[in-house]
Length: 256
Ligand code: ADP
Ligand code: MG
Image 1 (tube, rainbow, N blue to C red):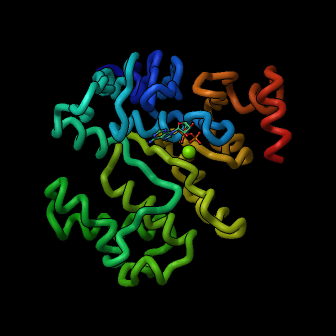
Image 2: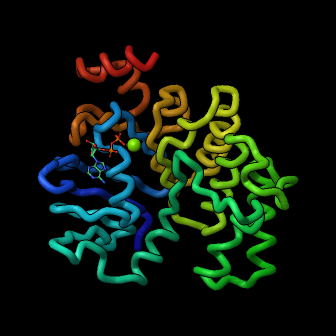
């Protein structure tokens, strides 16, 4: 692989749920170190796109390439799941997802949450995984919360634990699905800061967000989805500073 091969490439992707086509031919490329933000109204297909990249969904046409390797799958009938379990594991490890609702395991401490998958799924050495987990929890500013349970933390702290858990997989890229949408405004900023730090250290990321300031601050490329199609895209300066489409103009004025 050369450095020019994108980490993630979506090519002419089409995705339907039954009769309902929700992704109608989308192309997105993320090279190493790129931060791509996906914006758009509720129902425009943002989560579906991320879920396709993570092999949580099939598609009907087009391709998704991870470092040049085709990973999208086109399911039919009852066999609607990817054929190759090893590939699924490798892709989910390398494109680690952070969800709106954190999805921490309630019965495990924060430290256990972060080191669980590296130990049980990736078969990493337990001591090494624990050391890495502590280091990532420190990095997101909750190194003192190792031994508490998720319910004892604020939403912002839980989401930072979820980010540490994603980082502990040592992924090639991080996929964020509305990481700050479930948080009170004052807690949003602590998560935004972590995402900005990750962008500054050159992480490859695709971020679905309703936070236009975050998208403007961290992105190399902003994609505005409308009903399963890219309506407008470009640098933050282009998309926010020199908006072309009437729909994007309307969307931006409604989110202010
Ligand atoms: P967004 O994240 O932009 O709000 P989604 O990707 O969640 O959009 O949804 C896109 C469209 O697909 C919506 O019309 C939604 O109702 C529909 N949809 C999402 N998930 C499913 C599903 N599992 N089954 C059927 N329809 C779905
Ligand atoms: Mg969504």
